[in-house]
Amino acid sequence: MGRRIRTFEPHKVYAVVIRTVDQQFLLKPDHNSKHPLLTSGCPVEAFNRFHEKIPDPSIIDVIGVAAARAKELAPINIHWVESNINHLHVGFSVTPEQLSNIAPFFRNFFSYIAVKLNKKWKRNGHAFGASYRATVCLDDVSVEQQMIYAITNPVKDFLVEKVSESPFFTTFHHLAQGGVKLRYFRIDWDGYHLAGSHRKKSHCPQDYVQWYDLEITSIPGQANWPDHKRQAWIRAQVRAVEERVQEMLRKKGRRAMGLAAQYAANPRARPAHQKATGGQPLCHCSDPEQRKAFERHWRGILSEYRKASIDYRMGMWDRAFPEGTYRPPLIKPYLDAYF
Image (cartoon, rainbow, N blue to C red; front, side, top):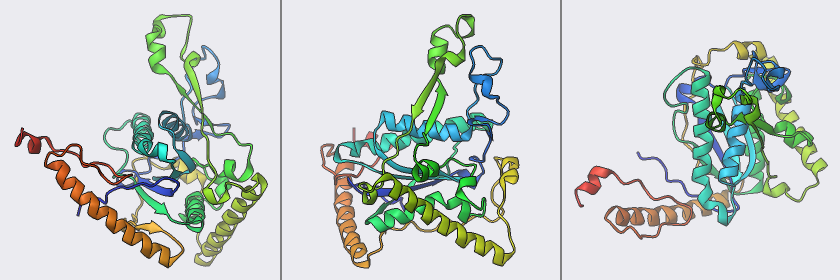
């Protein structure tokens, strides 16, 4: 069966999930406890000019830069970005003017992370096992559920007991506490080499450190809430999930994986019992009637898309597609048969 077509609508929140190839632990923590943006073996003084060590970005910094830079190149509204040891969660929405930015945003976001992960772990090939899944949330309740699910994912997977202890990339502190800046760095190596690289003694890589601020947009249902109310709500929801998971662990006589084991994990390792990838839901919704209405709407879009796809592949290059969908790829041997 072919992959489900992607269709996006403005002002709707989408919950995105993507896993690493073979569910490998490529997103394992590796940061310095004194400076989360640097790897554990890199001193904070590396930011000083002409220091013997060059700032080495951690996984946290890589994901932060990837999101902020992708948003800068192709603006969309980001509501949350959360990492686990082998997968990522992103929540986003767009305005009508930003519909065409979705594809380039995720292309830039995932490709930057993949390049940096391969360099960090000295590997080649794909970093992510398949294309990302984007599922629409039809109401405010489902948006809130998906956001809390993403934030508390490391707790539910028994990696940590509290989200505040998570060593992975998270927007929780920014969302729940306020005043916590999501700021990340990268070195402009192109500019450094164009300026003469190490042959020019008057400059160093630290001169080409660029900083990116990741802007998080409140979810639509809470856009008009005062900051203190929104933050208190998130803390309460996260605390409730943590208490349920801790009670579950006590009943089973188990403990969370813990930070030491996560730092010591082999990035090429994978879970002993991998989760089976289930079918992607058509949508997230708390109202059964609204879900049924969306299913009818979806079937109409799919029918129109199939007709447009057939016409397009037969040479009708100006054929209009349903708004928010993407044209199918054209296979060169197929074209050569006609031209």
